[in-house]
Length: 415
Ligand code: SF4
Image (cartoon, rainbow, N blue to C red):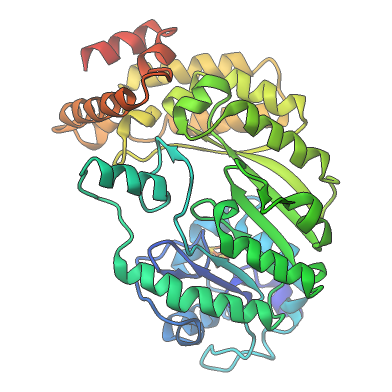
């Protein structure tokens, strides 16, 4: 028992958590890094499979599995969430409930099932895997798909995942749900499950987490906060934000900024802000979004909101959305300017962002990653971006957002 408390390799996720991504791949959790192919297995097949049994054995032996190394290095890690916040009492149970071969009699209490890409937004950094709106748009314009959920995976989501999730809900076996997708607040299944949990009075045992675009808080005249969350053990709302105002609307087609702010303020007003209720902003910094950085920080600090953020580093989907598409000298200058701007107000949020920006300097730029093809990649990306912009002529354009920075503006013109 005490050994498990001191065994730093142990994370409770392999004993308590069921995760499936939008490609139908079961993994230990959203943070684990495994090279796995779509396996389309049932939870029963996966839970005590050779792979998971091995992970449990490794952890009990004090070894950190390769898939967990990055996560376990982080502060406030996912591991801490599962092992300290969610079900810390189980640390005392796992050994008793784990056989020598790593199989366990424990069942998942926490579900993160990404079972639909239904989403009403088309964020420029996103693709068809995560957004049905992108899927529709690409079909409409006959754009061949690089990222697509295939029919077999869609059938698996409907026929297997939905069923086993609903069965676990009905059995009262779930203590935590992470709702994310796609946009979960646009799914009927989400609302039906929440309604069942409220009607059956099981909601008081369940903590719900949302990663949401926060565009919609109502279903059939019923409000997420007033009619549902008020009955739950607790909740965390991670509202995604890429930029404020017009730049925000540019980055996320489908977003109406004023409505979004209204929803966020409604969420804040209906959240107690204690350990069981929290609203935070999850920010993805794209290259255009960096031009809105001071406004984002001001917006969050006016509401006293915690920020979590990532910098968009994907150079495959739409490279021009990533700051790493810039030549190194321009990128470093942009980062230096931002850090100077943020530094005088050394709040926790600012210091974290500064750290993140400085870390970006150590990443390989597009040109460094693809020394022979980078210019062709940029030209294709610009052509694609201009096509997308031509479909929304009333929105801002990339060139307008970046025009305050002469170097970046002339780099854009030269592409
Ligand atoms: S250690 Fe981290 S990556 Fe591994 S299972 Fe736990 S939460 Fe997931």
